[in-house]
Image (cartoon, rainbow, N blue to C red):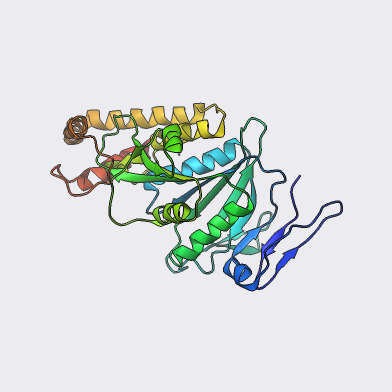
Length: 328
Protein backbone atom coordinates (compact mmCIF):
# COMPACT_ATOMS: atom_id res chain seq x y z
CA UNK A 1 0.00 0.00 0.00
CA UNK A 2 1.54 3.32 -1.06
CA UNK A 3 0.67 6.85 -0.17
CA UNK A 4 -0.66 9.17 -2.88
CA UNK A 5 1.40 11.11 -5.40
CA UNK A 6 2.91 14.38 -4.28
CA UNK A 7 4.91 17.17 -5.84
CA UNK A 8 7.16 19.60 -4.01
CA UNK A 9 6.18 22.82 -5.77
CA UNK A 10 7.00 26.51 -5.55
CA UNK A 11 5.41 27.70 -2.33
CA UNK A 12 3.01 24.80 -1.86
CA UNK A 13 2.65 21.06 -2.08
CA UNK A 14 -0.15 19.40 -3.99
CA UNK A 15 -1.48 16.11 -2.67
CA UNK A 16 -3.99 14.00 -4.58
CA UNK A 17 -5.81 11.69 -2.20
CA UNK A 18 -7.48 8.54 -3.48
CA UNK A 19 -10.61 7.15 -1.80
CA UNK A 20 -9.76 5.34 1.38
CA UNK A 21 -6.34 6.96 1.67
CA UNK A 22 -5.23 9.70 4.01
CA UNK A 23 -3.16 12.71 3.01
CA UNK A 24 0.48 13.34 3.82
CA UNK A 25 1.53 15.98 6.29
CA UNK A 26 4.11 18.16 4.55
CA UNK A 27 6.36 21.00 5.58
CA UNK A 28 5.00 23.34 2.93
CA UNK A 29 6.77 26.55 3.85
CA UNK A 30 7.73 28.63 0.87
CA UNK A 31 11.48 28.34 1.42
CA UNK A 32 11.42 24.54 1.83
CA UNK A 33 9.06 23.97 -1.10
CA UNK A 34 10.95 26.27 -3.42
CA UNK A 35 14.23 24.61 -2.54
CA UNK A 36 13.02 21.16 -3.53
CA UNK A 37 10.81 22.17 -6.44
CA UNK A 38 12.67 19.84 -8.79
CA UNK A 39 11.85 16.71 -6.76
CA UNK A 40 8.74 14.71 -7.62
CA UNK A 41 7.69 11.74 -5.49
CA UNK A 42 4.80 9.84 -7.02
CA UNK A 43 4.23 7.49 -4.09
CA UNK A 44 5.85 7.02 -0.70
CA UNK A 45 6.14 3.55 0.84
CA UNK A 46 3.61 2.80 3.52
CA UNK A 47 5.37 1.40 6.58
CA UNK A 48 8.97 1.62 5.32
CA UNK A 49 11.31 -1.20 6.35
CA UNK A 50 14.65 0.48 7.12
CA UNK A 51 15.18 1.55 3.50
CA UNK A 52 18.66 1.71 2.02
CA UNK A 53 19.24 4.20 -0.79
CA UNK A 54 21.83 2.99 -3.30
CA UNK A 55 22.80 5.56 -5.92
CA UNK A 56 25.32 5.67 -8.77
CA UNK A 57 26.22 8.26 -11.38
CA UNK A 58 27.51 7.75 -14.89
CA UNK A 59 30.52 9.71 -16.07
CA UNK A 60 33.59 10.59 -14.01
CA UNK A 61 32.53 8.37 -11.07
CA UNK A 62 31.74 5.31 -13.21
CA UNK A 63 34.78 3.74 -14.86
CA UNK A 64 33.75 1.05 -17.36
CA UNK A 65 30.12 1.76 -16.32
CA UNK A 66 30.59 -0.68 -13.44
CA UNK A 67 28.73 1.32 -10.79
CA UNK A 68 25.63 2.25 -12.79
CA UNK A 69 25.43 -1.27 -14.21
CA UNK A 70 25.54 -2.71 -10.69
CA UNK A 71 22.79 -0.36 -9.52
CA UNK A 72 20.56 -1.18 -12.48
CA UNK A 73 21.23 -4.87 -11.99
CA UNK A 74 20.02 -4.72 -8.40
CA UNK A 75 16.93 -2.74 -9.38
CA UNK A 76 16.05 -5.25 -12.11
CA UNK A 77 16.79 -8.32 -10.01
CA UNK A 78 14.45 -7.19 -7.23
CA UNK A 79 11.78 -5.82 -9.59
CA UNK A 80 12.09 -2.25 -8.39
CA UNK A 81 9.46 0.19 -9.67
CA UNK A 82 10.04 3.86 -10.41
CA UNK A 83 8.47 6.15 -7.83
CA UNK A 84 10.39 9.44 -7.94
CA UNK A 85 12.61 11.63 -10.06
CA UNK A 86 14.54 14.89 -10.02
CA UNK A 87 13.80 17.29 -12.86
CA UNK A 88 17.05 17.90 -14.80
CA UNK A 89 16.32 21.52 -15.78
CA UNK A 90 18.47 23.22 -13.13
CA UNK A 91 21.24 20.65 -12.86
CA UNK A 92 22.34 19.76 -16.40
CA UNK A 93 23.95 21.63 -19.27
CA UNK A 94 21.99 20.19 -22.17
CA UNK A 95 24.70 21.19 -24.62
CA UNK A 96 27.02 18.78 -22.81
CA UNK A 97 24.51 16.09 -21.88
CA UNK A 98 22.07 16.23 -24.75
CA UNK A 99 18.50 14.95 -24.64
CA UNK A 100 17.52 12.64 -27.46
CA UNK A 101 14.42 12.22 -29.54
CA UNK A 102 12.59 8.96 -30.19
CA UNK A 103 9.28 7.72 -31.48
CA UNK A 104 6.62 7.21 -28.86
CA UNK A 105 5.79 3.61 -28.08
CA UNK A 106 3.49 2.19 -30.74
CA UNK A 107 3.77 5.24 -33.00
CA UNK A 108 5.69 5.84 -36.22
CA UNK A 109 4.81 9.53 -36.41
CA UNK A 110 4.81 10.99 -32.89
CA UNK A 111 8.13 11.73 -31.24
CA UNK A 112 9.10 12.53 -27.67
CA UNK A 113 12.12 14.07 -26.01
CA UNK A 114 14.00 12.01 -23.43
CA UNK A 115 15.87 14.26 -21.01
CA UNK A 116 18.78 13.39 -18.72
CA UNK A 117 17.14 12.34 -15.49
CA UNK A 118 17.70 11.20 -11.94
CA UNK A 119 15.23 8.39 -11.38
CA UNK A 120 14.53 6.44 -8.22
CA UNK A 121 12.99 2.98 -8.03
CA UNK A 122 11.89 1.03 -4.97
CA UNK A 123 11.79 -2.71 -4.30
CA UNK A 124 9.91 -4.16 -1.35
CA UNK A 125 10.26 -7.86 -2.14
CA UNK A 126 9.55 -10.29 0.69
CA UNK A 127 13.01 -11.84 0.36
CA UNK A 128 14.61 -8.48 1.12
CA UNK A 129 15.38 -7.76 4.76
CA UNK A 130 14.79 -4.07 4.10
CA UNK A 131 13.36 -1.82 1.40
CA UNK A 132 15.73 -1.10 -1.47
CA UNK A 133 15.72 2.29 -3.19
CA UNK A 134 17.93 2.60 -6.27
CA UNK A 135 18.90 5.87 -7.90
CA UNK A 136 20.74 6.16 -11.22
CA UNK A 137 21.72 9.39 -12.96
CA UNK A 138 24.30 11.10 -15.08
CA UNK A 139 26.63 13.24 -13.01
CA UNK A 140 25.03 16.71 -13.00
CA UNK A 141 26.92 19.73 -14.29
CA UNK A 142 25.44 22.47 -12.10
CA UNK A 143 24.41 23.32 -8.52
CA UNK A 144 25.89 20.26 -6.87
CA UNK A 145 25.04 21.42 -3.33
CA UNK A 146 21.39 21.95 -4.24
CA UNK A 147 21.30 18.67 -6.13
CA UNK A 148 22.71 16.72 -3.17
CA UNK A 149 20.27 18.42 -0.81
CA UNK A 150 17.45 17.30 -3.11
CA UNK A 151 18.68 13.69 -3.08
CA UNK A 152 18.82 13.76 0.71
CA UNK A 153 15.34 15.27 0.91
CA UNK A 154 14.13 12.16 -0.89
CA UNK A 155 16.09 10.03 1.58
CA UNK A 156 14.37 11.81 4.48
CA UNK A 157 10.90 11.47 3.00
CA UNK A 158 11.48 7.75 2.50
CA UNK A 159 13.01 7.39 5.98
CA UNK A 160 16.17 5.88 4.51
CA UNK A 161 18.45 4.51 7.21
CA UNK A 162 21.54 4.17 4.99
CA UNK A 163 22.77 6.03 1.91
CA UNK A 164 25.22 3.97 -0.15
CA UNK A 165 26.97 5.43 -3.18
CA UNK A 166 28.61 3.16 -5.73
CA UNK A 167 31.54 4.18 -7.88
CA UNK A 168 34.33 2.81 -10.04
CA UNK A 169 37.78 4.29 -10.56
CA UNK A 170 40.60 3.68 -13.02
CA UNK A 171 43.64 2.17 -11.34
CA UNK A 172 46.94 0.59 -12.29
CA UNK A 173 45.74 -2.91 -11.46
CA UNK A 174 45.84 -6.03 -13.65
CA UNK A 175 42.64 -7.72 -14.77
CA UNK A 176 44.09 -11.05 -13.61
CA UNK A 177 43.65 -10.15 -9.93
CA UNK A 178 40.42 -10.08 -7.89
CA UNK A 179 38.66 -6.73 -8.06
CA UNK A 180 39.70 -4.44 -5.23
CA UNK A 181 36.96 -2.54 -3.44
CA UNK A 182 37.70 0.63 -1.51
CA UNK A 183 35.65 3.34 0.09
CA UNK A 184 34.59 4.74 3.39
CA UNK A 185 31.71 4.87 5.84
CA UNK A 186 30.40 7.12 8.57
CA UNK A 187 30.84 4.42 11.20
CA UNK A 188 33.19 1.51 11.74
CA UNK A 189 30.45 -1.12 11.92
CA UNK A 190 29.11 -0.26 8.47
CA UNK A 191 32.64 -0.21 7.04
CA UNK A 192 33.27 -3.66 8.52
CA UNK A 193 30.04 -5.05 7.09
CA UNK A 194 31.02 -3.80 3.65
CA UNK A 195 34.58 -5.00 4.09
CA UNK A 196 35.97 -1.83 2.57
CA UNK A 197 39.53 -0.64 2.69
CA UNK A 198 39.71 3.08 3.39
CA UNK A 199 41.26 5.19 0.67
CA UNK A 200 43.77 7.96 1.31
CA UNK A 201 42.99 9.69 -1.96
CA UNK A 202 43.20 13.48 -2.07
CA UNK A 203 42.45 15.36 -5.25
CA UNK A 204 39.61 16.19 -7.64
CA UNK A 205 36.28 14.66 -6.75
CA UNK A 206 32.94 14.04 -8.38
CA UNK A 207 29.32 14.23 -7.30
CA UNK A 208 29.76 11.01 -5.30
CA UNK A 209 32.42 12.59 -3.10
CA UNK A 210 30.30 15.69 -2.58
CA UNK A 211 27.19 13.67 -1.73
CA UNK A 212 29.12 11.54 0.76
CA UNK A 213 30.48 14.62 2.53
CA UNK A 214 27.06 16.25 2.77
CA UNK A 215 25.59 12.99 4.09
CA UNK A 216 28.16 13.01 6.86
CA UNK A 217 27.58 16.69 7.65
CA UNK A 218 23.82 16.17 7.89
CA UNK A 219 24.03 13.11 10.11
CA UNK A 220 23.09 10.40 7.63
CA UNK A 221 24.51 6.93 8.02
CA UNK A 222 26.36 6.62 4.74
CA UNK A 223 29.02 4.66 2.91
CA UNK A 224 30.74 4.70 -0.45
CA UNK A 225 31.91 1.58 -2.28
CA UNK A 226 34.28 1.82 -5.24
CA UNK A 227 35.61 -0.85 -7.59
CA UNK A 228 39.13 -0.58 -9.02
CA UNK A 229 39.01 -0.97 -12.81
CA UNK A 230 42.14 -1.68 -14.91
CA UNK A 231 42.87 1.54 -16.74
CA UNK A 232 43.92 -0.22 -19.94
CA UNK A 233 40.40 -1.59 -20.51
CA UNK A 234 38.48 1.48 -19.40
CA UNK A 235 36.50 1.91 -22.60
CA UNK A 236 34.45 -1.28 -22.34
CA UNK A 237 31.96 -2.55 -19.81
CA UNK A 238 33.58 -4.54 -17.04
CA UNK A 239 31.26 -7.25 -15.66
CA UNK A 240 33.97 -8.33 -13.22
CA UNK A 241 33.83 -4.99 -11.41
CA UNK A 242 30.03 -4.98 -11.56
CA UNK A 243 29.86 -8.45 -10.03
CA UNK A 244 32.23 -7.45 -7.23
CA UNK A 245 30.03 -4.48 -6.31
CA UNK A 246 26.81 -6.50 -6.40
CA UNK A 247 28.24 -9.28 -4.26
CA UNK A 248 29.47 -6.82 -1.65
CA UNK A 249 26.11 -5.03 -1.43
CA UNK A 250 23.90 -8.11 -1.04
CA UNK A 251 24.69 -8.76 2.66
CA UNK A 252 23.38 -5.28 3.47
CA UNK A 253 20.09 -6.32 1.87
CA UNK A 254 19.94 -9.52 3.90
CA UNK A 255 19.45 -11.71 0.87
CA UNK A 256 21.15 -13.60 -1.94
CA UNK A 257 20.78 -13.64 -5.71
CA UNK A 258 21.40 -16.09 -8.51
CA UNK A 259 24.28 -14.30 -10.22
CA UNK A 260 24.80 -16.87 -12.97
CA UNK A 261 24.28 -14.32 -15.74
CA UNK A 262 26.92 -11.96 -14.36
CA UNK A 263 29.28 -14.85 -13.64
CA UNK A 264 28.88 -16.05 -17.22
CA UNK A 265 29.66 -12.57 -18.52
CA UNK A 266 32.78 -12.46 -16.32
CA UNK A 267 33.92 -15.83 -17.64
CA UNK A 268 33.60 -14.65 -21.24
CA UNK A 269 35.29 -11.37 -20.35
CA UNK A 270 38.28 -13.18 -18.84
CA UNK A 271 38.51 -15.59 -21.77
CA UNK A 272 38.62 -12.70 -24.22
CA UNK A 273 41.37 -10.95 -22.32
CA UNK A 274 43.35 -14.17 -21.95
CA UNK A 275 43.22 -14.62 -25.71
CA UNK A 276 44.42 -11.06 -26.27
CA UNK A 277 47.36 -11.58 -23.94
CA UNK A 278 48.24 -14.88 -25.61
CA UNK A 279 48.34 -13.27 -29.05
CA UNK A 280 50.24 -10.11 -28.16
CA UNK A 281 53.63 -10.16 -26.46
CA UNK A 282 53.57 -6.42 -25.81
CA UNK A 283 50.30 -6.65 -23.90
CA UNK A 284 51.47 -9.77 -22.06
CA UNK A 285 54.60 -7.95 -20.92
CA UNK A 286 52.55 -4.98 -19.76
CA UNK A 287 50.24 -7.20 -17.69
CA UNK A 288 53.22 -8.96 -16.10
CA UNK A 289 54.67 -5.63 -15.01
CA UNK A 290 51.33 -4.66 -13.48
CA UNK A 291 51.10 -8.01 -11.67
CA UNK A 292 54.61 -7.61 -10.28
CA UNK A 293 53.93 -4.10 -9.11
CA UNK A 294 50.54 -5.12 -7.72
CA UNK A 295 52.16 -7.81 -5.59
CA UNK A 296 54.79 -5.42 -4.25
CA UNK A 297 52.74 -2.26 -3.70
CA UNK A 298 48.98 -2.80 -3.48
CA UNK A 299 47.33 0.48 -4.36
CA UNK A 300 43.78 1.68 -3.88
CA UNK A 301 44.30 5.02 -5.57
CA UNK A 302 43.28 6.27 -9.02
CA UNK A 303 45.79 5.84 -11.81
CA UNK A 304 48.26 8.72 -11.80
CA UNK A 305 51.70 9.14 -13.33
CA UNK A 306 53.57 5.85 -13.65
CA UNK A 307 56.92 4.40 -14.54
CA UNK A 308 55.09 1.72 -16.52
CA UNK A 309 54.97 2.09 -20.30
CA UNK A 310 51.98 4.08 -21.58
CA UNK A 311 48.86 1.96 -21.96
CA UNK A 312 47.16 4.17 -24.54
CA UNK A 313 48.66 2.27 -27.47
CA UNK A 314 47.27 -0.98 -26.04
CA UNK A 315 43.74 0.21 -25.39
CA UNK A 316 42.59 0.43 -29.01
CA UNK A 317 43.88 -3.05 -29.77
CA UNK A 318 42.19 -4.57 -26.74
CA UNK A 319 38.88 -2.84 -27.37
CA UNK A 320 38.90 -3.80 -31.05
CA UNK A 321 39.43 -7.46 -30.16
CA UNK A 322 36.60 -7.45 -27.63
CA UNK A 323 34.22 -5.76 -30.06
CA UNK A 324 34.98 -8.45 -32.62
CA UNK A 325 33.88 -11.11 -30.13
CA UNK A 326 30.39 -9.67 -29.80
CA UNK A 327 27.68 -11.46 -31.77
CA UNK A 328 26.30 -9.57 -34.74
